[in-house]
Image 1 (tube, helix red, strand yellow):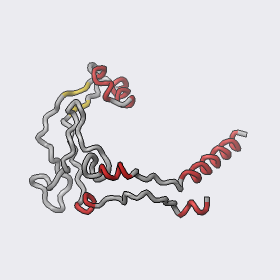
Image 2 (tube, rainbow, N blue to C red; image 1 turned 135 degrees about the vertical axis):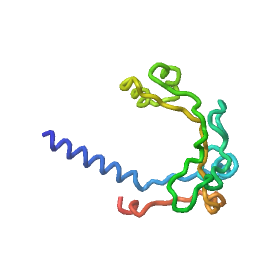
Image 3 (cartoon, rainbow, N blue to C red; image 1 turned 90 degrees about the horizontal axis):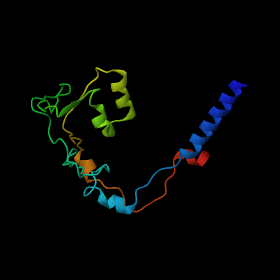
Length: 150
């Protein structure tokens, strides 16, 4: 009986996934108009937060880090950053509102666990073709090829 219940549940999940797969989200024209002004080219909020812990996005890294040469692996552009503070099992309560449940659980499970906190950066940069391309402000209906078979 248990095996047949699992099969029925699996089929129901596959059916539900098939019903929702053809749906695609569309941006409203007023949201499209914000791209490049209030929003980054990919739709994130450009402004920093009120606390000042997250800076405004200014276009991200515009050039490779000093010393990087083609063929090299990752070079840390922020190697000189200093640790702002360290979270430990003793002070995790002070920072719990900014941590996920899983992160807080790490401190409870592993009392010697520490988390170094560095300044936030918004280093994501996009090629010029992405930064200057805007979606059409005209909403249009789209369906995926699977919609015809659903």
